Image (cartoon, rainbow, N blue to C red):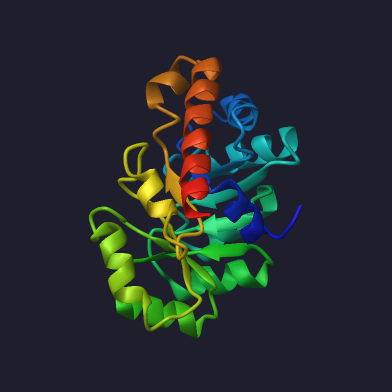
Length: 215
């Protein structure tokens, strides 16, 4: 199956999931899996996050479940105890990164400046989240700040959608992108899992097109 980072790279796209009812997590992640994307970043933007991570991980043991918007080491512990195998943060906070590393999960802190990248390098991180991607200058900004850090790779998130996904993924420094456009809140509220399957398949097809062009 490969390491967590290898699985993220293979997927090419990390769905960012905001969920209000943990009972919906198994069906939602099931829709992503059926659509060809066996991965989900369930964020701490709602109180349901930990229970949703647990429900998704138990229902789909072969899917890669992670936690998003983690702000504290305590959230890291709660997420990993519930089954998360990677932890994403909006910024780079050393205690959050180190706790994630201590627990054996993959840390993907948000970085947007050269100073962020220097701290990531000091923490021996091979991959970081580039956030907020579009607001921070997009792919042009990655190209501008990445040169002093050979080998460092990025998961741009924030403003990524079906219109710009392919341009990001064609850059070899981009391991994957994060986004939520295939999981529209209206579809989740309506429990329209078939709609999420369809939009996920479209997103997966875009990933494949981008990678075909790159190869």
